[in-house]
Image: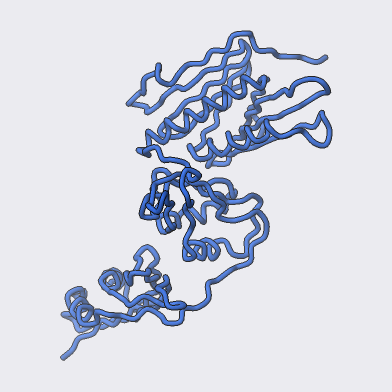
Length: 364
């Protein structure tokens, strides 16, 4: 026996503007779709998009970042425009996972001869312990996707992201700098990616991505290796009539498949310390007093990346060797005060990793 579930003729769609923001829970309901047997609610909760589906026996909720939600909506709209192949009855599925990889939101499409496409919203957890299937017409699925898009906008608003024009509004779109590409390649080198890693970012006029509006999408668990690099990524900014402009861009950071470890070629010259006099004074000033008074010396070896302005990036500090742990903090503080002539490659400054030996000793 085949059970067919139909929507009642009326669709309840609640506008975001008519539903106030709850300041205590930071929740804004966007829309509700009620068929009598299933209910789907779209909301923004603490800057994320939340979709709840409930049937008479099951309930499932999916949470995604605004960037993930927009990517999913774009994928579904693309599927709706694409003809089914190779058979009219083929069923297609599109999947998005939350950051915890716990739940799945999928749309299935079926088509029979001389009949319009039919869709089904499928929400379940990965263990299939809970699952809700919601039939939808093309028109109602479009309304649902509009609601998810509105929830993503509200999420950006909660996160403090000002609206930005799409990159195609500019004459030239933002592009990752070669140094940023090299960082990503080094972090992912040698790994196999089951899906591409994408970046959605709001890039300012200076080429720096805004943290609140930047999301790493797809890539499975490998995306977590890329996320720590985001604050250090730099772009050539978008331009309109020769002037830099702030835009939202989505680009591929790494393609699906195997990756070969691509290390940048070595610099023509390595970073060179410029303020040795100031550093000698810092060594005296930061020498741990207990060990200085006791005449105890200590060596510390630190590796650090020096950026294109000659400033050490303390987020990249790695202590390779330390004689006594008490010297560790003092040595890192000394490195933070160093200024270098940056490494050079082909006549331009490049980011490079250098090893800095530091010695705390008493001059008699």
